[in-house]
Image (cartoon, rainbow, N blue to C red; front, side, top):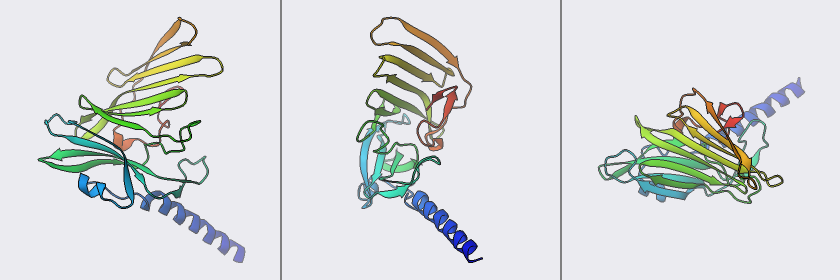
Length: 226
């Protein structure tokens, strides 16, 4: 009986601990303005970009924030509990000269130690021609996501994945077009001119930035993940 009680107490402690690590560490930035976020004592701005996202000729912002403190967090069910600095992406719209956070995602941005062979991974963030672009450069590959403002959300419209195998020189380039519902997949070898092209159709509804989970968990087609 005593052993069962101890086991139940241990399980409750683990559940509560994981809940605190995964939920309470993320503040709610919705509704906050740029000045408030810039002066937050617990989070720093890792990336910042500005531009007109909703075509009203006012300057909007996108920010990637990183916690100043490391915490124990389990990113995926099959991963270990690791110490990391959490990251958040937020989108702010300019409403008559007042920037207001309307979108926040606590899961999608990769952490510093999730870059494979890279000792440290930091995404690039940009707003170009009204589109929000998140870009990652890895050791032998890169990944980008492009979002467009629609119905008060940032909706993915395209993405691109590029990778090269160091041992063979074989490469693969996948361009995702969510408006056409297709992937243009090119494969070949960096030492050869011949490139094989395949067009893969898909019917998956585009996700909003708010709906994204961890990177590379969303299966678009067989063996094609974003």
